[in-house]
Length: 192
Image 1: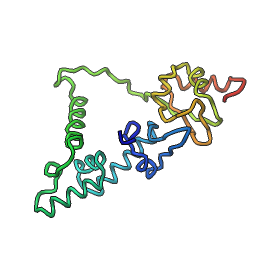
Image 2: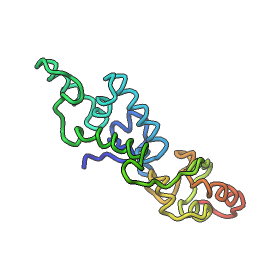
Image 3: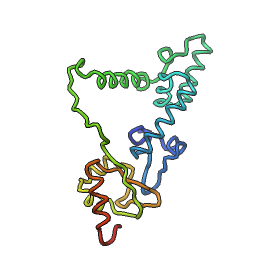
Image 4: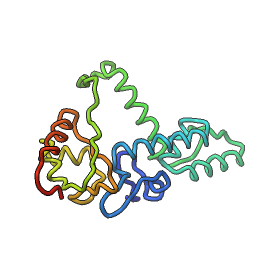
């Protein structure tokens, strides 16, 4: 509702601050690799600012200015300034317990009566260089994947064409990346 986008829910201004480009053709707040790197940079910056992971995560969710004001209010009232003592929206208050619950489930799924599907010890996707403008439909066809698979890994693209000048790579499923590279080298005809 507040125009946050992508896996890490970047606001437009915060995305620009962390060099996540947003234009007619792509919104890098939704790019898997770029937004993850930016989120890690942002969380590290917030940790350095607050010196506490709970406060850093609260600031990621609620905004560092809001957390700073809540700390100041408590300090001025002679109250503790730790995460549990601050007054904040329920969404932010529940953010950390939800993250911790996820960590606990992944770390020990049997404890919670769950079985997680085993993951192969290899990358799920590979970054493949894009040197010329190319239609998304052609990438999908040459990689032998569905449009849905492409968009799950590359949700940043807003248009059916990828402009090489602004995008140096696309992500493709591990098993399909080599197929794409091989077929692209053999492809005759227009790319876009």
